[in-house]
Amino acid sequence: MSSIETRCVQGGYVAGNGEPRQVPIVQSTTFKYDSSEDMGKLFDLEAEGYFYTRLQNPTNDAVAKKICQLEGGSAAMLTSSGQAATFFSLFNICENGGHVVASSAIYGGSYNLLAHTMAKMGVESTFVSPTCSREELEAAFRPNTKAVFGESIANPALAVLDIQMFAEAAHAHGVPLIVDNTFPTPVNCRPIEWGADIVTHSTTKYMDGHGSAVGGAIVDSGNFDWMAHADKFPGLTTPDESYHGIVYAQKFGQQGAFITKATSQLMRDFGSIQSPQNAYYLNLGLESLHVRVPQHCKNGQAAAEFLATHPKVASVRYPGLKGDRYYDLAQKYMPNGTCGVVSFDVAGGRAAAERFMGALKICNIETHVADSRTCCLHPASATHRQMSDEELVAAGISPAMVRLSCGLEGTDDIIADLEQALASI
Ligand SMILES: *Cc1c(COP(=O)(O)O)cnc(C)c1O
Image (cartoon, rainbow, N blue to C red; front, side):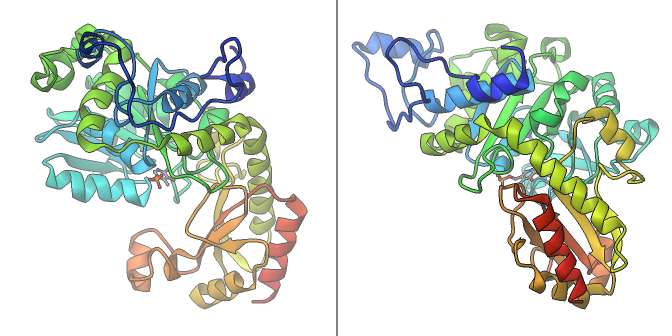
């Protein structure tokens, strides 16, 4: 199955003779066996099969397999949310005493997870600028570093990660690079092709695409040699006493160890499973991902170009815009397009931004991005409203900043809405 289009439509599930054409929703918590011996083999990970939906479910597995094929990985799993995917991808290899090097331009939830919650679990993080030099990046590593983490396009900073440079630095220190690829999706960017080892997603965004189901996914490239760095990753390379003394990297090899451990250990213990019903909705979204993403990008590009020349707009950030500080990296890693999200500062400060937002008609005010309906958010009066103007600036968010997520509507209608709202200021 070669093209990304065919993988979006047909990947992950093959119907047998007389079986449902659409991926069936297996709405069952449990599965029946003829003998205890049959079931025992599943518990010993000696045979493949299902026994309890917290660990694995056929609907989820089919959809995970499609995302795996889209990213070009060796194994994948779904999680209940993007946050769960980020946490599992890191905690699977970083335990108490470990350390993570992360780009500072990441989703707020991922920053909180690393800077606060995982710090309480004894995993420290060092944040580096997404525009750091190789030397600055090198300086962030410690002997106990276990992973490097970044976003291919950061939400909401819209910084593009230099995936190749971050991967080379990670590998020089014997650790994997984990990339959150939510914004470009595998239609526009496939981080594994540039050296990333693990890819994560908030499937809540473009993959679902319709604002209907929260979810996440983790894809392993199968390229990282855990055994070659056995002392750094004892969870994968020494016996798991909580699972009959299995050594994941030996029993499941480089291709299967990471996802098998995350499933049989982390999903077992944390239980952040995606419901089969939500996996079904996600799959409906994936079937048209390759058709929708170009339209999101077309609208994002048009909105960015319109805003960049408008006298009532002070500045625009969009990696597809010529002159943007991330334009060259975007051309390298995602030459067919970036995403539909644009951020800009309205001239005239906070009051002008609030006025502009209130005048929008097609663009709805929402705490969301990346679905079929255009939406926007004024962080200073929503997600970051507890901060003073000074604190906002320190956090890299201007009081006049608006984050616009271009949906799938007609380009001219979105531009006309922006135009009339700017005219009202
Ligand atoms: C939304 C988002 C997340 C978190 O995903 P949820 O599905 O909301 O838990 C993580 N990373 C990025 C880039 C996101 O946009």
